[in-house]
Length: 163
Image 1 (cartoon, rainbow, N blue to C red):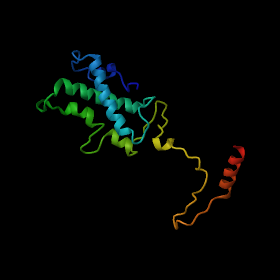
Image 2 (cartoon, helix red, strand yellow):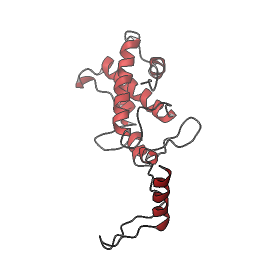
Image 3 (cartoon, rainbow, N blue to C red):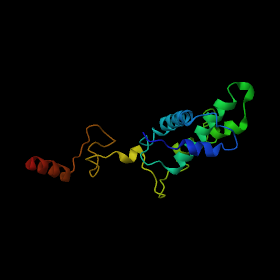
Image 4 (cartoon, one colour):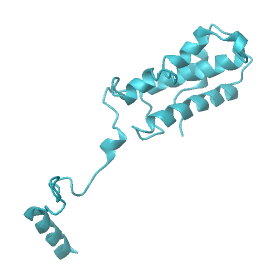
């Protein structure tokens, strides 16, 4: 799985804070935490992990990774809580209030687009059926009310003849 962001990008976001004592390997670990959460939430709507990372997912990953880095450095206990640090996470994922960018994406309020501006296909968009060109056989009024379209029967017969 390719990372959704780099350690350098996370370091750039928290550049006003001394994180020199944290190695790139530790920052990459925090990126992994963020990616796992992003994938867990977005998997209900999209195929994850993303092979081509949408810019918004990258932004979310950078901010969430920065949150985990800052939390590790400064808020190891509840005494040192900071709204500044918490906002890196809560802007994108507030589980308590079910708000944030990730919820907005899942509810369709914010479209997830690729770097070219095209909307990323949802998992349901990827489902294909070999009967999508035919009307349903069963109607909703009665279980016994069946009507198989003649063109479907013809296609089935043609497929048997070809096989």
